[in-house]
Every structure is written in structure tokens, then in C-alpha cells.
Image (cartoon, rainbow, N blue to C red; front, side, top):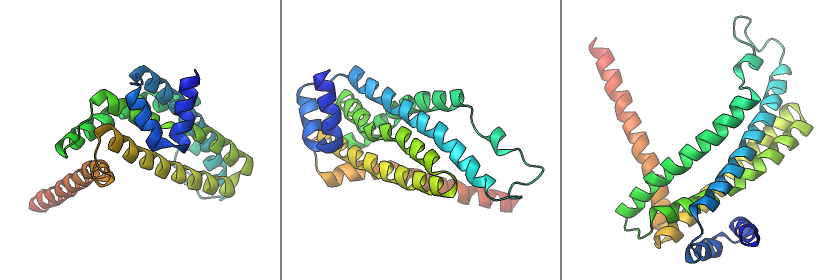
Length: 209
């Protein structure tokens, strides 16, 4: 338990040295899975809390919602669905995204193992534990104020997670920060290029009809 708490604290405040130590100590994938589970539960709780904030924000604009449209309450996920989606989606994205980044890192000369990437990328999700308190702060603030606070703080968390992702890739594959950033960015660039090509092809095919 002491080692786990040390890894949690180190990931949040001394990530680079903590990641190196975790690799040396061969921190297990099961430990990382526990961290992912905690992060996903907190993220789901934050989602549940912020949903009500956004609903109350729209309520401040009478007539905003068209009469024929479903109510915002109907459009929102139930608490059970939100939590399930957060946990299941979180674990799937952890494994799939780590796998994609691992392949890209190998292409760029990385030397790490997939299990090492899984461990460090799992711990890189740790800042998401703050999503639950962010949701609570948003509810206490209420309305537009709560919604803007929530969006701002969640944006900060996203940047924090991206920074930890870069450090995790760098330490796991033992190469430069530049290559780690390239590893993280390249899949998104390729995806955007593919989407752009598909759009162009679609427009061309439609114009031919």
C-alpha cells in the first residue's frame, strides 16, 4: 500500500523520476489497472455531477429548447449508464490507445515493452481522479459559472494527462521528449488526413451522381 501511495503521489508531482523507478521495480499491470479503475470511477462521477450543471445552465435560457426536441433530461445518460460508459470506455481506450502508441513508438525506434507502456500510460490517467471534485465544485457554483469552471478545470486536467502521456512514452521507450511527442501526435495526424481524404472522396462521389 505504501508503494502504491508513493507511486500515486510521485506520478502527480514527480512523474519522470517516478516512472523510471516504476520501470526499475517492474510495477505490475494489475496495479496500473487499479489506478485506471479509480480514475474511470472518478471521471464517471464527475460526468454525472456536471450533467446536472449543464442542464441547469440551459434552464437559464427560457425558450432555448425547441418544443419538438427531446428534453435535456431525456438526452442525458442515466447515472448508471454514465458510470458504466466511463469505466468500460476507459479500460478499452487505455488498452487500445496504448497499443497504437506502442506500435508508433517502435517504428520511431522505441525499446520498451507493451506491458511497460500499459503500466505508465495507466498511471498517466491519474489526474482524472480530480474530475469528481471538479463536478462537485461546478454544482456548488451552479449555472453558467459552474459550467465554465467545469470546462476550464477539465481542460487543465486534459493538458496534465497529455504531459504525463509524453513522459510515460519517453520513459517506457527510452528515447527523447521530441520522439515521445511525435509518437503521441502522429496517430492523430494520420487520422485527420484519412478523414480529410474520405471527405474529399465522398464529395467527389456525390458530385458524380
